[in-house]
Structure formats: structure tokens, C-alpha cells
Length: 169
Image 1 (spheres, helix red, strand yellow):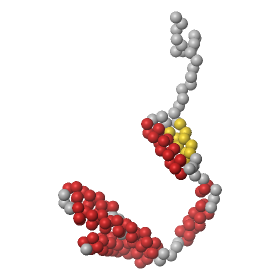
Image 2 (cartoon, helix red, strand yellow):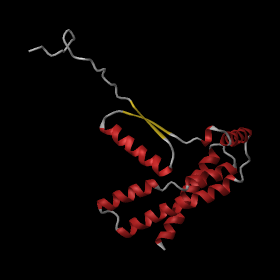
Image 3 (cartoon, one colour):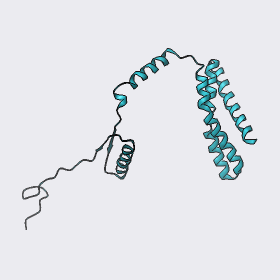
Image 4 (cartoon, one colour):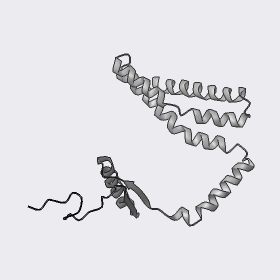
């Protein structure tokens, strides 16, 4: 019962605060509704504070679990609520043009190319990166190109008359 009460209180508080803020800020009713639905998923702060409270002994395990459940439920409920609210918003001409351009680009040649290109050096981080790229490319079965950024020293022939040449014995 405590969990359901906390979920209802948190959802109502977050939704109404964002909705009223949108209305005061000059948004339309539909825009404020979408803003309230989107802001309802803000549960990460509660989880962080609950974790600190649990570690300090201020919260017990049951209350901590209730707060985490509230954060999970409000986060998971946001996508369908936001989809419902955004369906009530009229699409602006700029948004329509953007969607049309994205659809055109998705059908193009460049969108269908998948290839990894990575520049690495001989440092431990570079070696780890090249291994991770190999694992990723192998798992997704995509081509990868790894370029070494290490400069190679030119090899010089050592001999008489050359710098650093060994002295004849």
C-alpha cells in the first residue's frame, strides 16, 4: 500500500509541477501535458538519494525498495504516456520537414554502410581499444579498420662513415 501511495504522490507531484510550469511559461495545454508526461520519469535522483539514505542508516530496506520501485514504475510508464500526449500535438512545418529529410537520408547509400574506423597508438589504452573494436566488429559482423598512429623510425644502415656506426676493432 505504501508503494502505491508513493507512486501516486510522486507521479502527481512531478506531473503537476511540470504541467503548471509549462502553462506559466506560455506553453499550450497540449504542450504542457506532454511536458508533464515526459518529466514524470525523473526517478534517478530519488534512487541516488535513497541509496545514500540506506548507506547512512536513515532508510530501512523496505522503504529503499519502495522508493526504487516508484522510480522504476514512473520511468517505465513514461514512454506510453508521452506517446499518447505527443499524438495530441500538431506537427509544425519544421518538424515535418525534418522527418521528411530523415526518411530520405535513411533510404540513401550512406545510411546503409556500417564500418568501424579507429586510430590507435601503442599505449595500453590503444591496445585495449583495438581489442574492443575487434570484439564489437566480430559480434556485429561488420568490417573494421584499425589505423596505427605510431611513428616508425627510419632504419639506417650502420657502417663506416655513418653516424652511430660501430667502430672497427
